[in-house]
Amino acid sequence: MALPVRDQAKYWGVVTAIVVFVLLFLGNVLLPFVLGGAIAYCLDPIADRFERMGLSRVVSVALITLIALLIFVILVLLVIPTLVQQTAALIDTAPELFNKLQTALTEKFPQLLDSDSVIRKQMIAIGELLQTKGGDVVNGLLTSALGLINVIVLLVVVPVVAFYLLLDWDNMVAKIDELLPRDHADVVRNLASQIDHTLASFIRGQGTVCLALGSYYAIALMIAGLNFGLLVGAIAGLISFIPYVGALVGGTLAIGLALFQYWGDWVSVGIIAGIFAVGQFLEGNILTPKLVGQSVGLHPVWLIFALSVFGSLFGFIGMLVAVPVAAMIGVVTRYGIEQYKESLLYRGLEDKK
Image (tube, rainbow, N blue to C red; front, side):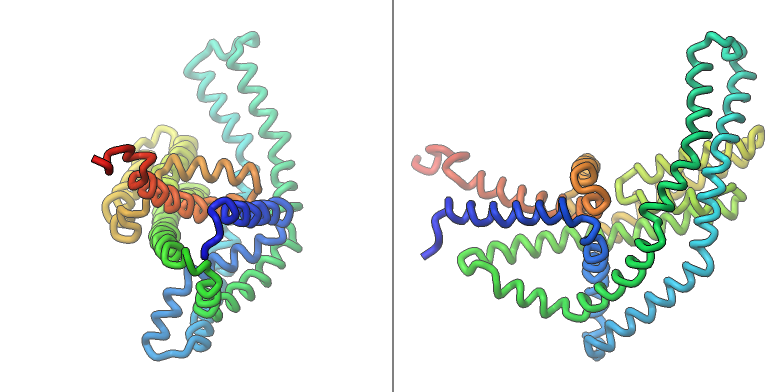
C-alpha cells in the first residue's frame, strides 16, 4: 500500500531542502565533483559505443582518457598561453581603446569638449574607472577563480572524478534504478528518459556547436588579422549556448576592436562583420538543426532566467547546474501540465456528460 500523498510530499520536500542546503553551503567543495560528473555524463555514450565495438569498459575509459589527455596537452601548448596573453593584453589596452574612442567622438562632436558637458563628464568617469579597476579585476581573478591552489585542485580532482564516474556509470544508474519507489518507478524512468534526451540534445549537441563556432570564430578572426581574435572567438563560442547572445556579444566586441584597428579601412571592418554573419548562418541552418535538433524544449528566455537565478543564489556552481536543472524543471512541468489537463480540475464535469 502506497504512502498517502501528503506523506510523500513531506518526505520529498525534506530531500529537496537537503539538496538546496548542500548547494548553498558546499558549493565550492562540490565544484570539482559537478564538473567531473558532467564530463562523465557527456563521455558515457562514447564509452558505450566503444563497448559495442568489442572493447571492455575499462579499456574504453582508458582510451577516452588518453585521447582527452592528448587534447589537453595540445591546448596547453598551443592555445591556452595565447589566450591568457591576449586576455591580459586586452585588459591593459582597454583604457587606451577608450581614449581613442573619446578622441574620435570629440572630433565628430566638438561640443563634447565643453567641460560642463554631462556626456564628457561621464566619459571621463568611465575612463578613470577602467584605469583604476582594470588592475583590481586582474588581481581578483588571480587570487580567486584562477588561484593556483584552485587550478591545481580542478586539474587533478576533476579528471580523477570523471574517470571513476565514467568507469562505474552504468552500475550507478542501475543502483539508482533499484532505489526508485516501486509505485512510481515507471513514471520516474519515463521522466528520466525525457530529461536525458533533453540534456543530451542540449549539452552534448550544443556543446559541440559551441566548440565548432568558437573554433571557427577564433581561426577566422586570426586569419583576418584582428587583434585579440583568439580571445573574441573563445568568448563568442563559450556563450553560444544561449541563442544569438554569443554572436551578438562576440560580434559587437570584434567589430568594436576592428573599428579601432582598421579605422577608415571599411573593407576589413566588413570582413570582420561578415565572419559573424557567416557564423550565424552556419549555426542556424547547419550546426544547430543537425547537432541539437528542434525538440530540446529550452527557450532562450528560460535559459537566461535560470542562469540568473541559480548564479545569484549559488554562485559559479549554480551557473553550472542551471542548464540541467532548467531542463529537468521543464520536463517535470510539461508532465505536470499533461496530468493537469487529464484531471477533473481542468476538465470539470465534462467527463460526466
